[in-house]
Image 1: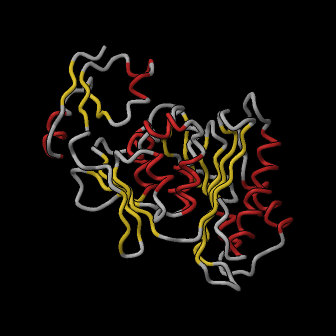
Image 2: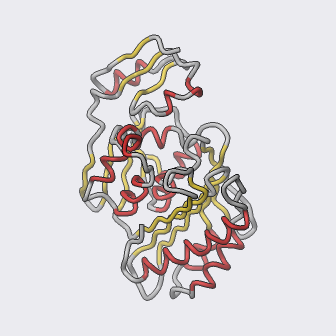
Length: 287
């Protein structure tokens, strides 16, 4: 039960106040209003720390931890795929509450997993939470090779390392480069939990593909970089859609849920990755 809300004026003060396991940082408060937070007694509000800005400079977009998803949607200078991912939280009320920092802060707790998968089906497991299992933002951040700035670290964390290690630290911002990136998602209705999210990025260097990153999430148990698919595509001409679909179907083993079977998710993942890559190759970001 929450007994106290603290309102620090500086980042060092906020870090100092977060000394108890029963304390948590308060941004939008969507997770903190769930039963998962019943053991908390202290909230540390981030409202006075100036972490809600969205800035572009030197080929990157930096989004403060307390920037809401609606701010990202409205930020015309932000990468289109990131804006599209934020817009997939369909309720504007929730978009106005949820923050980038909150989404990242819950990406590495509890039960689900993030993987890098190769053709031999070996995985490097990171943690993710059921709260953010169907996140559309995190796959895009992985596809864009985002970096996360933390209060007590001098250097930013690459997003995959952040999700793997989940340092107990205050998130300050996330920075993403401006690269061609596409996101596609599957859900039964506009307000249903997502069953599948696909994010693909590559550099604009046709006729061959370079720096390809393919991320798929079954929105339940795994968020996967398909390394075997990336290696097959790297430095090659764009394959036919059917070849991409076959390659993705071989590399991805999604978990079923009440909305979609494993076979359906695997089938749709191939189609969405193929569509996204072909859209990027035609010079279009395809959110």
